Amino acid sequence: MTTLQVRVWRGGPQGGDYRAYEVPRQASQSVLDVVTYIQRTLDPTLAYRFACRVGMCGSCAMTVNGVARWTCRTHVDQVCADGRLELAPLANLPVIRDLVADMREFFDKWARARGRFAGRRTRHDDFERVAPDSEPRRQVDAAIECIGCGVCYSSCDVVAWNPDYLGPAALNRAWTLQRDVRDAAQAERLRAVAGDAGCHACHTHLSCTERCPKHISPTAGIAGLKRAAAAAALKGEL
Amino acid sequence: MNPVRRARNHPGYWAFLVHRVSGILLALYLPAHFWALGLALHDAARLDAFLRWTDQPLVRFGEWGLVLLLAAHFSGGLRLLALEFLPWREWHKSLAAVAAGVSLALALAFALAL
Image (cartoon, rainbow over all chains, first blue to last red; front, side, top):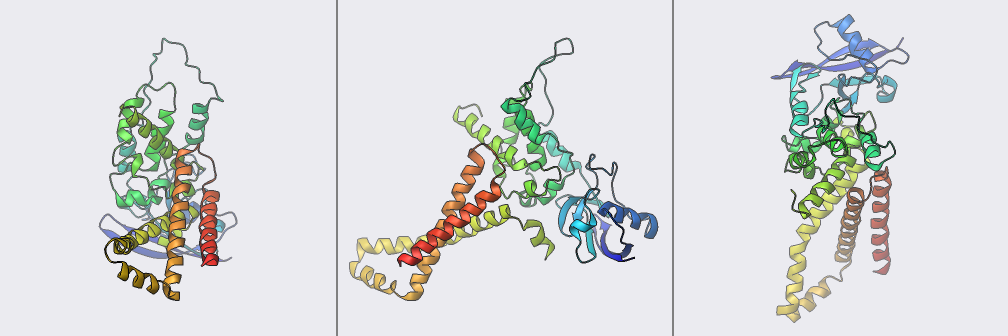
C-alpha cells in the first residue's frame, strides 16, 4: 500500500503552520476521505467541516494544493500526481480553526445583495406560472444550483483587493432574483448591487467561473447585472 | 507550481493579465508619443533628427513591441465587450484564444511590412 504525504494547515485566527501526516492511499479516495482519516485515526484535534459528503451541502470546501475545491467530490487522483497534498482553509475568509473558515461575512454579503425573494402574491392567490422555456427562466436555471460552498468567493482576487466587494456568489444570487419574473424588489436589489462594491467591481478574471464545482458561471450573472445597471442608469432609474 | 500561480493559471486570468500589463505599458509610452508629436509643431529639425533615430534596428524592434501591445490591448478589449455585452455563452476560452491569435497576426503583419 502506498501512502500520501499530506500537509495540513493547523492554527487559528492568530496564525498557524502546516503539519505533516502520512495517510494510506486508497482506490477512489476523495480529499475529504483523507481529512477524515487524519481526524479519526491520526489526530482527533483536527477541526474541519463537512455534512452531506455528496456535493449537496457546500460545507467541505477547502484549499487543495493551492486551489479552492469541494473536497467530498474531489478525488485524490484529480489533484495529486506526486503523492503530495497540501490542505488549507478557504482563502479570503477569516479562519476559525484549522480547516474551518468563518463563513459569516460570505453569507452577510448575500443579505447585502438583497438575496431574498420578495413575492407579490399571498397564500390566497393562485400560483404564478413561469414558462420553463422563457428566456428569464433559462437564465435562472443556469445559475440557480449554487450550494453556497464559497469556492468562487475564495478564488476571487477582487474579494482579496476590496474586502467590501459582494463577491461572485452573492451577485449570482442577486442575478437569479433579478431574472425571476415573480420578484417584486428588483429596483431596490439593482441599487444594492450597482455600487462600488457590487457588480461593477468585477474585473472578469473568470476565476469563479473556472472553479465553481457546480459549473455555474457567476461572471455571466455579474455581466447581466452590469448591463441591467447600465440600462437603468441611462433611463434615470438608478 | 507555486500555489498562488496555480490558482490563477487559467485562460481568463491570463487574458486579464495581458490586458492589464499591455494597458499599463501603453500608458507609460503615451507621454513619449505626445512629446514626439509636439516636435512636429515646434521644432521641425529636431523632429527629423528624431525620426532618423527611430530608423535604428533596436528602435524598430521596440516599435514592433508597441504594435503587439496595442493589438493585444485592442483585441482584449473587444473580447471583454463581447463577453459582457453579447448574450452569454460558453465561449470565453475561445474568445481569449481568438484575441491572442488576432494580436499575434497583427504584430506579424507589422513585422513583415517593416
